[in-house]
Amino acid sequence: MCGIIGYVGSGDAVPLVLEGLKRLEYRGYDSAGFALVEDGQLVVEKSAGRLSEFMASLGDSLPSGRAAIAHTRWATHGAPTDNNAHPHTDCTGRIAVIHNGIIENVAVLRATLAKHGHSFRSDTDTEVLAHLIEHLYEDSLQGAVAAALKQVEGAYGLAVICTYEPHTIVAAKQGSPLLLGVGDGENFVASDAAAVLQHTRSVVYLDDGEMAVLTKDGYQIPDLDTTRVAKAVSPVDWDLATIERGGYPHFMLKEIMEQPVSICNTLRGHLLPEDGNARLSGINLSDAELLEFDRVVLIACGTSWHAALIGEYMLEELARVPVEVEYASEFRYRNPIIDDRTLVVGISQSGETADTLAAVREAKKKGAWTLGIVNVVGSSIAREVDGGTYIHAGPEIGVASTKAFTCQVTALALLTLRLGRQRALSVLQGREIVEALNALPEQVKAVLAKANEIERIAEQYVRAPNALYLGRGYNFPVALEGALKLKEISYIHAEGYPAAEMKHGPIALIDGMMPVVFVAPQDGVYPKIVSNLEEVKARGGRVFAVVTDGDDQIARLADHVFTIPKTLDSLTPLLSVLPLQLFAYYIAVRRGCNVDQPRNLAKAVTVE
Ligand code: G6P
Image 1: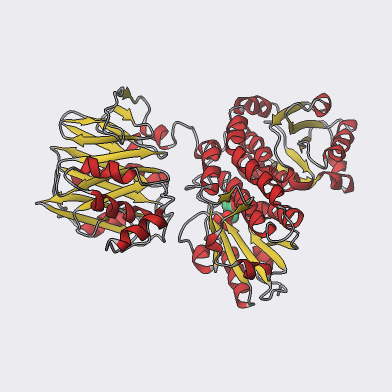
Image 2: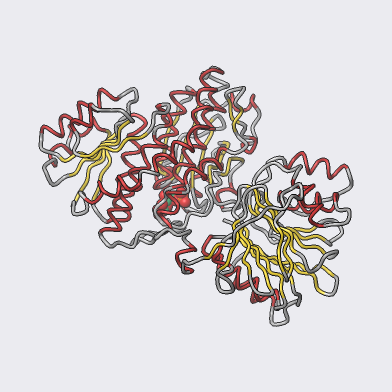
C-alpha cells in the first residue's frame, strides 16, 4: 500500500525522504515522488516504476530544502503512470499533497471545483484534494487543510506543503495510518514507523480526525476545529524488519490478519442498502445491456479459480444466471463457445497471470464483454478488460494468496447482487445480503481473534504426510482452497474433495495417519456432511472440523473443532476459509518452511 514520509528540520530534506521511501518499499508500490520548496518555488519530481530507477533518473544534483514530503503510490484511482504519481499540486503550483486512502465523494468535489475553474491533470482523487485546499486557502495552510477535510468523505493519511509556509508540513489522518517521528531540531511524518526509525524512536501515533502541524522546532496536533489535542510520545522498540511486517513474523500472517480491513475496502462505496443492490459503475454496462447476457464464464488460476467457483454457486443460486468456471489455461486453447451474449469475468490478484490474460484476450476476440476482478490497479488484465472492479485488498506480498481470496469472493457477492437484482433476487433478499456483507468485517475480526486456538490445533497435525479436505456446497471450493494453502506452504500433500465424492475413491486412504479437515458450517447441506463425517470416523480417521458457533453435534464426533459465526450460506466461505489459512500457516511455521516464499512458487505467474 502507499507510503508517506515527510521531513522538516535543518538537514537536507530530499536525501532524507528518499531514504525513508526506501524503507517503505516492502509495502509494494508502483510509482514514487517527492515535493519541496526550493528558493520559494515548489519543486515536484515523480515517476512510475521502481524507486531505484526514479532515484537514478534524478542524478546527483538533488533540489535542496529543509522540508519535503515524499510518497510511494500503490494505484487505486487511475493507472500507475508518471502523471498519477504523488505529489499532486493545485492550479497555481504552490501546494503539494501526498495521500494514502480513498476519497469517496471525489466525483462531487471534482465537479464543484471544475465549476470554479479548476482543471485537473491526473485521474487521481488526491489531485482533487490539492485543488480543494487551494480553493479554501485564506491565510493559513492548517486552516485550508482543515476546511478541505470537512468536505471530504473517505479515508486519508496525508501530508501537505506549500510555498506560502515553506518550513511547515501539515498532515492529517482519517482511517489510514499516520504517525509523527519526534526528533531533536527535526520532525517527521510517516505512514509507518519503518520510515523514521533510523532517525528517531520517539513517535506520536495520530488518531482519526487529528491533524499535525510540524516545523523544525516542534509540532501541534489540532483536530479539524483547531482544538489542540494532547498526545503521548511512544517509544518504538521493534527492529526494522519486524516493523515492515507490522509486527508480524511473516507477511502471510499480516495479510491474514488484515482481512477485516481489506474486505471493508472491497465493499467501500459499492453497497446500496435501500435497494438491496450493489453499485458497480466500473463494469461499464447499463441495466439493459446487463440483461442481454445469457451466461457468465469465470476464468482464473490458482486461488482466484477457487474464488470463481464460489462465485458460480452464488450467481447461479441467487442471480439465476448460468455460470461456467474455467481454468484460464484450458479455456485459452480449447475453442470454447463464446459469443456476444456471454459475460466473461477474469479474476486475478496480480492482474498479470499470463494464462488469465490470454484467456481474456481470447474471449474478447470471440465477441464477449470482458470484466476483470483484479487487485493490482493498472495491471495488464485491468487494462485489457472492457470493465470491472478492483478489490482494493492492498499489496499481497506473501506468495500464498489469502486476503485477495476473501476480497475476490466479496467482489463476486457484489456482482451477484448487481446481476441478481435485475433477475431473480427480491429487494428483501438483496437487503439481507447487503446486511450480511456489512456485518462480515466484524465477524472476520472475531474469527481471527481466535488464531491461538488454531495454532494449538495445528500442533496436532504438524507431522501428517497427507491431508484430505472435504466440504459441500459453498464450502466445497473452500476445501479446495484449504488444501491448496497447506500444500503451497507446508509441502504436505493435500487434496480437496466434495465431501460425498470421498466415497468414490479417497475413502480408501483413510486411516489414523490421514487427517481429514471438514468444512461443515450449519448451512443447507449440513445434515449431509454430518453423515460424511460419520463415515470417516467409522474408519478411524482423525477429524478437524470447522463448524458454526454452538454446534455440538459435530463437536461430539470430531477430534478438534473450530467455530465460526453464523452468516448467510452464500457468505460462509468468507469465514470458513480463515481457520484453514491459519491452520496451513501454523503448520508450515512449525515445519520450518519459508512461509512467505515457498519453494518453486511465484507470486505472479507471467509465463504459460
Ligand atoms: C500463482 C500464485 C497464487 C495465485 C495464482 C493466480 O500461482 O502463487 O497464489 O492464486 O498465481 O494468480 P492471480 O494473480 O492471477 O490471482
